[in-house]
Length: 77
Image (cartoon, rainbow, N blue to C red):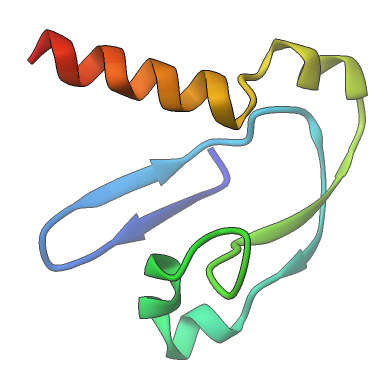
């Protein structure tokens, strides 16, 4: 675990999907945490990472696979 995110409604741990070194932190979120809702691809990013083992990324889902995974979870509910 590298950090935790807390709000009025919930608290969640944030896990790194691969080994690496954090090279930059989005300090804007300290004053404007609502930016998390904007999206990770824009103002809501948390960290920049220098990845140690690029092979670990091959095990991760791409955007389409993740969307399909979420759809299946909703179908199960």
